[in-house]
Image (cartoon, rainbow, N blue to C red; front, side):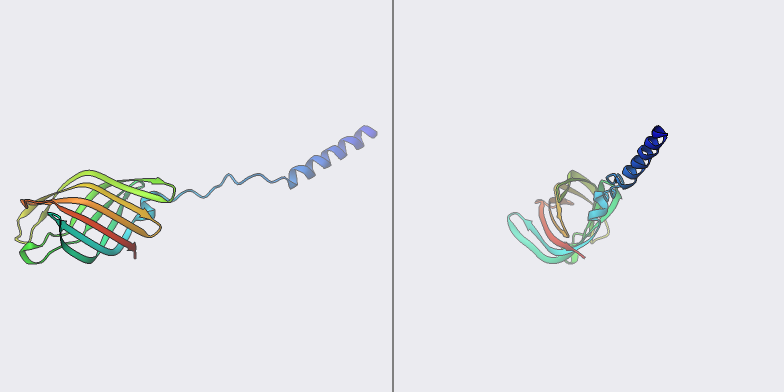
Length: 162
């Protein structure tokens, strides 16, 4: 009889112990893809420098579109006026990496074609592209060679997510 009582008490104690023990949450929230963290429109100051001289300093909006979980495309708005206009251009396949709270996007070289102010196709090359995202801010730097212009443009943009 004592053995039955001992077993019953042991089972009750084990049931009590297992019912009050909690386990750590294995259901951690999945991290949002880096591209989803940076996609959107950013408005801020864009500076274009040609041959060491500032040629444009304006408020512009840069649009980042998610392509995959780890890459985005960027539309850089047009700059200039009249026949001296560089139309909006796209930089595709910007690879993203994350370190701490900083997300970095980079492209060594991207080549594309757009319709120029005169309606003809113009080739462009974006090189040395870097975008640094922190909270709701982005800093973008790149070099742009447009058409047959003799000098590349150095583009700099600092903006805040809209």
